[in-house]
Image (tube, rainbow, N blue to C red; front, side):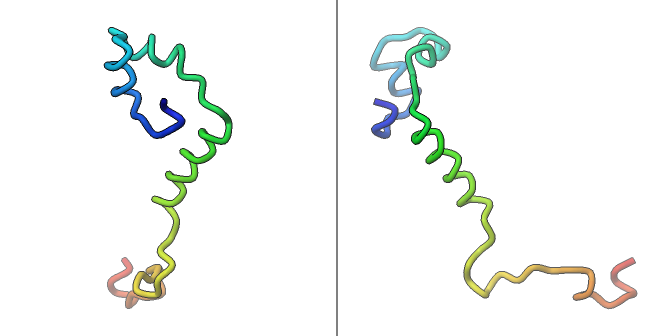
Length: 67
């Protein structure tokens, strides 16, 4: 269920587990599923592809403001 998109909390409630520990005991995730989860994080932290976001460095500030 989890690898098809269901949330862990949903699975816990559907299966009647009292604790998340019990749900995790049976949540055998494939390496590919874990890799996709990591890629979601990478997508959140990747720099924007549009030119509207520019990296700012100290060279962009006057010397008086950089101190």
